[in-house]
Length: 107
Image 1 (cartoon, rainbow, N blue to C red):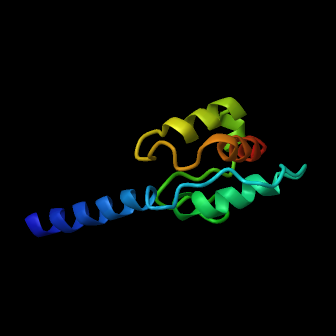
Image 2: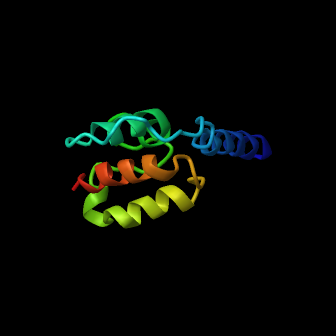
């Protein structure tokens, strides 16, 4: 029984720590495009390892309809400050704004 708990704990720790392993994003030099592709690009680089390439969720929750639950400001606050097992500041500044804007459109 102890061995099972030890293995389960190790898997949980590794899974949760994967969200914080990404390199800190740097503000992008390109302007936001009207279709949100810059926000999507940043998401793919910094968020998809936990939330999935298609927003389906993996270690972190799915985000396919996150814009129906939270507005852009709320999403940006979660990105900047973290929530639950999501660490704060995985992406920052203008990049966080771009991702929040893109995700707010997912309803």
